[in-house]
Image (cartoon, rainbow, N blue to C red; front, top):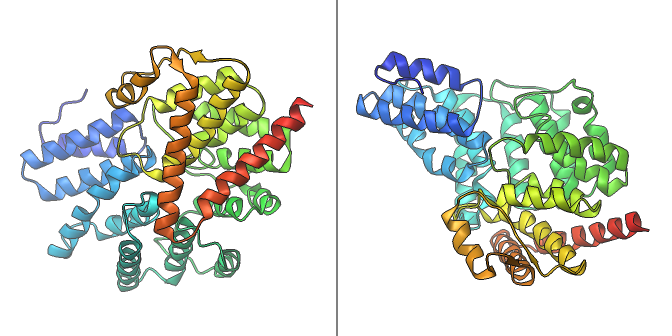
Length: 375
């Protein structure tokens, strides 16, 4: 591990951290924050916090990033021109895109944050396009689907880009997720063509897009193409990081296609990262598919299974009542209950019933797929 004794040491480390994300990178960025604080160097601390938030967001620790972010804005507001306001505004997009993952964030808070975001971006001169984009993202994240498709089409007509716009690859990937919720699977696959052909790529794409396309192909019954995306998605889970958002796509593929060993392995890998602060949105679909997988084991005649989780005190406390050899019926009931709690909490906050209906819809579709494949 590199030494961090001087400001120059820290800047050298932060420069390297710009080019990769990993659990080790997250720890290094946090050490940079601590060292900058010990040097009482606010400018350096600002750079280190930016690097740390970058690691958090792209390692799917959005909850921690949300807690860390206000400090950046506070410094920029208290010391105009001293800190990199552009970088703070860029991070603001990551925060706004994640703020609604937890039902603990009230609608009024989300609306206030969106209003502040719009004001800051307008004052900075970002242009209307990026503001409109994040209004669409917020609308989708609250699962307000009425008029969403038309909003996307109108947005795509505006070609006047600005310096704070997301890259084209990220925009396309985000719209594909929206089309999944709108159940416009054919259009999603057409939209994905530049990504599939390798014409649109970035640090997140296609890694974060392939799981969505796996789901799209499953819904369309394009199993050869689904297998391709399943393979590429599986490769991303060999890394030492959690991804509760994308894991359900791959887990559902393993469930539907009868790959029980791979499903168990993925379940063990992801649950090992479970912590109390993982938001409801991340847990909901994962627990839903995990519940269905465990039920499939029960249906096959199994009553107990030995799971091998990585050391995790929180998970150990959860699993302890289920026994050393996990009682599948009790485990399935817990997963099912947790998925329903998450869906109900988010729906109550969003003032709709999207998630509860979507869980029922996905389950119906997955069961039809399983029946068709088994036949």
